[in-house]
Image 1 (tube, rainbow, N blue to C red):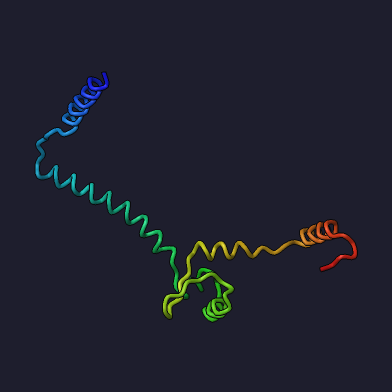
Image 2 (cartoon, rainbow, N blue to C red):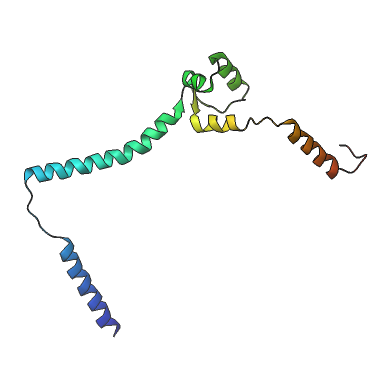
Length: 131
């Protein structure tokens, strides 16, 4: 029984494969168009992934423009490790997403938020015990 089922599946697979491998006649223009479309599609896929990565990288001058800071300030912040950066040899590189995240981390609390945080701190700590 298993043997008959296996033979039937194998026969069905051969029929399906022969249907997939059809022979067709194409003109030179048809082939050129098919190749051109395939190459364009392949380049479009690869250029999107490489292009985005290339656009995300910035040098010091571009980072200075993006952050609206002087280049000297950028160099100072990188030497103090205050700003996310990459260094390869003598060159500094910045990634736009990391700089955006760094900017967003710089939240300044309002007076009411600070008062609420202080009240929470005092309520959690037992009186007289300060570290």
